Structures are given as C-alpha cells and as structure tokens.
Image (cartoon, rainbow, N blue to C red; front, side):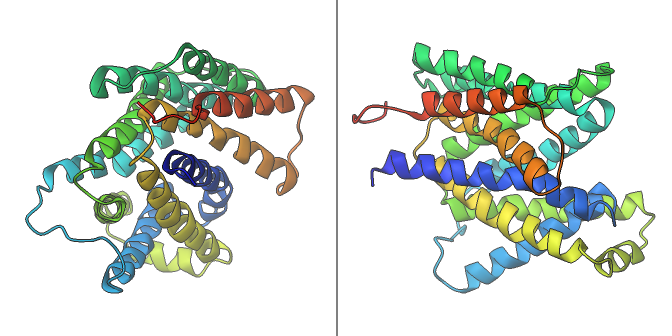
Length: 297
C-alpha cells in the first residue's frame, strides 16, 4: 500500500473515531462538568501513553530535542481548541457551530499554501468549499441566535484546528507521532485538571463522584483510549505524509459520523436533506484526498 494511501486511511479512521466522541462526551457530561470530563480523559490517556513508552516498542526519545515547538503544539491542541470549541458551542446553536467548524478545510488549504508552500488544485478548492455546504445541509434546523463572542470563540477553534495540522506537519520530520502525541496529552492532563480544580474550589470529590456514576467510566475509557490515544496517534502519523489541505478536509467527516451515530444509536430523527449533506461531504472528502498514481508534491 502506497504511503499516501495509508496516510489517507489513517486520517479517515482517526477523524471517524472523533465522530463518535460527541456521543460519549454527552454521556460523560451527564455526571461531570466539561473540564472534569476533559481532565479524566487526558489523565487516563497520558497514563496509557506512559505504559506504551515503558514497553520500549515506541519511537520515543525526547532527550536533547527542543521541546518548545512540542509545547506549542500541545497548547494549540488539545488545550486551546477544546476551550474555544466548548465555549463557542455553548454560546451558539449546534447548527451554526457545525457550519463554523466546517470552515476548517478551506482555512487548511489557505494556511497550508501560505505557511508550508503546499500546492492545491482547483478540484481541491471546489471540494473544500462544497464540504461547507454539505455541513450546512447535515446540520439543518436553523442558525438560531448568533452570539458575537460565541462566533469569535468558534473562529479561534477553527484556527486552532488548522494550526494543529500545520504544526504537526511541520514537526513530523523532527519528532515521531508518538512523541508529539505524548507531549500533547501531558499538557492536556495538567492544564484541564488545574482548571477543573479551580472551577470546583479544589474539591476532589467531583472526581470520585463522577467515577462512581454508571456509564461515566466506560465513556471516559472510549474518550481516553480510543478517541485520544488511537485517534491522535493516527492523525499525527497521517500528517507525516498528508498536506494540511488534504488532512483538514477529514474534519468534516466527523459531522457525518456524529449525525449517523445520533440516528442509529441514539434514535435521533433525520430529514432527507441531511442524507444529501452527508453524500456531499463524503464526495468532497474523496475529491480532496484523491490523487493519481504519482508522487505527492
């Protein structure tokens, strides 16, 4: 299997896993606040990463390497992205949030072109724009009340999503996917735990109470092991081969999976226009990621 094809599959699987994370996050937040949920998620994920590092089978050696760029990567994702996305979604409607996050592929093409001098074809531009309309169809239901602050939060989330792919791509020649993911989770576990403790006045019972709630631990295991360790490892590995423009289009695949999960698992209602939107997104993802049998520029 060609390296670019393998990277494409990694990106699709990684973002596909994230599509189910909304469902499990909803379950976990029935027992805890968002920051408690994120704290437990990244603590468990960081513990798993340490177990993998101790196994000696991972490409992991940070000795003598500059940690500044890795800390920047970890600050952008998961810390700033999750904060901006959480507050942005809470201040706007789900439909408007979905459309804003749908701007990630177009922003990815622009940033990849400006920062990494990546090339993009007219087909990729058209498909990236078309994916936004696919998101709009999939998240039908009206834009609802639009908050200026909420919109700014979502714009920042979009920028963080693109910067994550850009920085990860930039660091791919210097740090392994495991090293990048390890530092991201180390920062996430520390920062989100600190915020959760400040938010709850250093009351540790918020964690024990949540862990005793049925369903919380199962949801957190999915979010930590599958949606964090596996998904981020896959996406960081994919960034070794994929351009930022091709990688960011997969973010709209999250919308497809989350909507389908809501329909088939949670029994949510759906309209025919949503199916059209899913088809548009799927075709757009294929249109951006497809390339002929020649080396990627």
